[in-house]
Image 1 (spheres, rainbow, N blue to C red):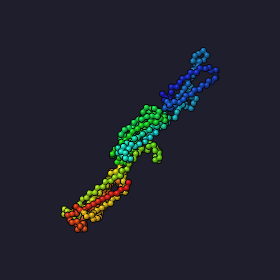
Image 2 (tube, rainbow, N blue to C red):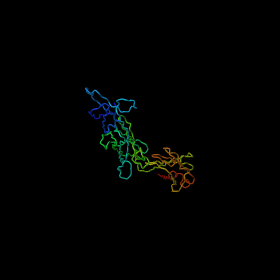
Image 3 (cartoon, one colour):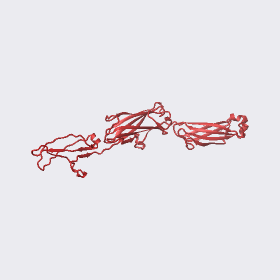
Image 4 (tube, rainbow, N blue to C red):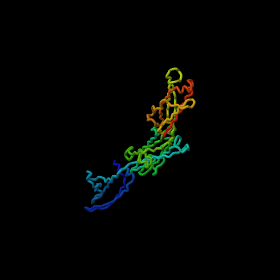
Length: 346
C-alpha cells in the first residue's frame, strides 16, 4: 500500500447531467502532519449515475488528466510532498566550583545540557544519544550521570520529535584527580533518529553553541582545566673510582644524574637548569662537564615537557688537587655539596 494513501472523508453528491454536459465539483484538504510523514496524498473520485429506466448502471473512476505517466485511465491524483529530515544537536557546559577556589579542577562538577532540535518537516522516532567524554590527553572518561531526558517543547514522549520540536537532556561529570592533571575535559554527543519508513537515517554530532570561536558546527564542548604548573627535580650521584683504591680522591669522577618531571597539568617549555657546586666550606666549584640533556621519556626535544614527562640530564665533576689541598683526603666525600635549581616557562 502506498504510504501516501490517506483515509479521507467520502462525500456523496447527487445531480443530473444532460447529454454532453459536464458538471464541476471542488474540494479541499488541509495537509496534516501525518500526510507529510507519509510523503504525500493519493486521491480518487468515483462517479455513479443512472440511465433512464436503470439504477446506478453508469460509473467511472477519476483519472488525473496526465497521460505522460503511462497510465491513461483511472489513475489516482497523487500529490507528492517533499520530505526533509534533519536534526541539530547542541551541548553546553556549566561548572560547579565545589572547591570554592575559583579554579576548575578535581572534584568540581561539569553540568552538561544537550538540546536536539528537529529541523526537518517530518516526525522523527527512535532518537538515541551516544556520548563521548575524554580528558585532555585523549583518555576515555564516563559521565557520572546521564544523559537523561528532561523535556520536549511540544510534549512528545522521549525518543520522538515533531517538526520544530526540541528535546532537552542533561548529564554531569565530577572531575577525577587523574583527569584534573590533563589540560581539559572534552565532550560530544552523536544523536541518531529515524524518519518515517527509515531506520537511523538522521544523525548529527553536537556543537558547543559558541560560534565566536570560528567553528560554527560540530565542534567538541571543551572545559579547560585551570593550569597548575609544577616540576620535581631530583639529582643523584655515583662515584667512579678511577684509580681503584677504594676511596674518593684525586682524579676520581662524580657522575650526576638529574631528572626533571612535569608534575603539573599543563605542558611546559623553555626549561633551563642553573647548577651550583660548592665545597664543604662554601667555596665555589665548577662542573667538569654538563649538565647535558640526555633524553625525555615522551620524546620531547630539550627544554619541553609534556604532561607527566621526565627529562634526564647528566653532569660530572673530577676531583682535583685544589680540592684535596683544601679539604683533606678523607673529608672529600662528606664535604662536597651540590645544589641544582630548575626554571621553566609555561
